[in-house]
Length: 112
Image (cartoon, rainbow, N blue to C red; front, side):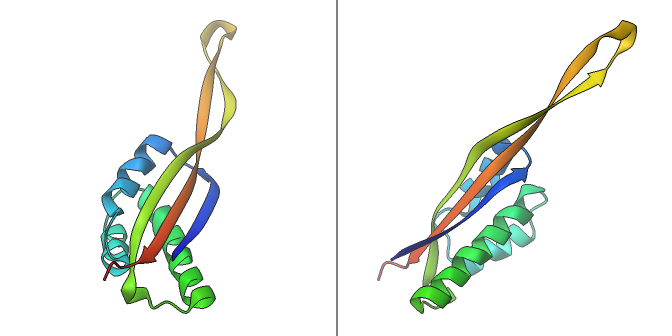
């Protein structure tokens, strides 16, 4: 059985978040959570939040124990970009793009 959790419109680069999500694919939930807790990347905190939510969904909705779950898939998709303008010399303006990310974590039963 596969259970997922999603967090949308999180501020941060999708490319940098994908580095974090690729590091936890296929790991047991406890190992993935410990790995995320000590990662220096800013996106690791957001991915950990989504991982805990997916684990809680499996425990509460399907009565699965956290120690029998693995991270089946972790995806970081691109969200909308906030566009702002920065004033520059001689009346010019340069664009500032503030990216957003959608994170989805899927947990599943361990293969016996």
